[in-house]
Length: 142
Image 1 (cartoon, rainbow, N blue to C red):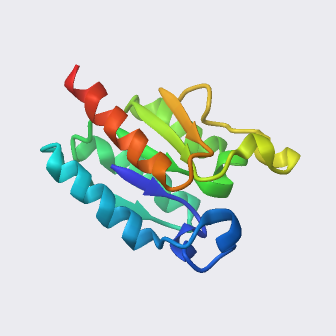
Image 2: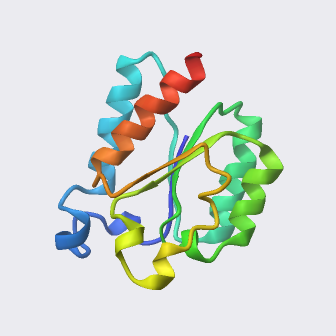
């Protein structure tokens, strides 16, 4: 499962100099193609609402999701509730960020998920999603 947080629905339009020109739909379509080539299924979800993202993590249990990739966007730095959702479900996950949050404003250097994520992929641009997906598929198969 791929979960994208607030404002990522505007990829391709917002701050193109920082986030690039690819839209979220283009990123998701590419990732679904990669998953299909690897005989895996990818469910994609985006929300600007913290509660909906938490519900999606909870719903992943019923859907038998084996691994989650998440770009929590601004909720990276604020959401203890999202952290608690991952701790409650125990579904392994990777944290993904298009930019290097450690090279941005001081408040963006804090991640409430970093220490509980299996791994973090930061600063690889949208390619980071692909790298994380391939790592997740490999992890699920071992």
